[in-house]
Image (cartoon, rainbow, N blue to C red):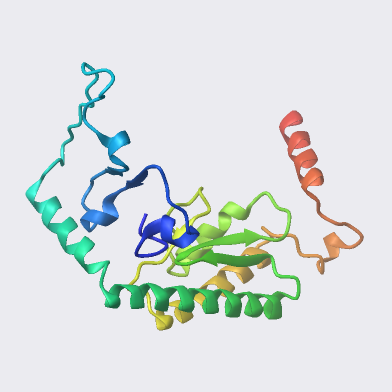
Length: 215
């Protein structure tokens, strides 16, 4: 949708889609669904089969509040001010990701985590094999960071995020990662128990199977 650019994913990836679908962003958060495409695909009737009619109706169809919000957003997203906001956030996020990854490497030597992003969409990439990565969300929550889309791996910044907001997020991520390691949820190669051992994806799977069999 409009997460990546004022022209949506089509603009960001430089493609022209046969059909596109938009959701609540166009309505300022009010539930809706929009399908757009060329006339031959969007026509209510079929020239070759007159009895074939596309029947479209919905709870929010033509709702005055929704249409007003959509009109406001769609007019705003075409302005130079909107494009400047998209460009600013894209630049801020890219710089923040690079700086946070550098800080993670300095803090841990072998960082357990790395960040990745395109435009305002970002994710956390786990660099050590492990069974308990999902625990990090709770340490982050305790640091004041509530993640959305847990389970999908996709996280998003809204356009009102500033560089100051992003800078506040970095130390919270660092602290949460340290707590994960200190509490034993991540493999620590420097610990006495880890000497001479190396974690691997297959090793973790095998240990999990053993636990299930002998439980």
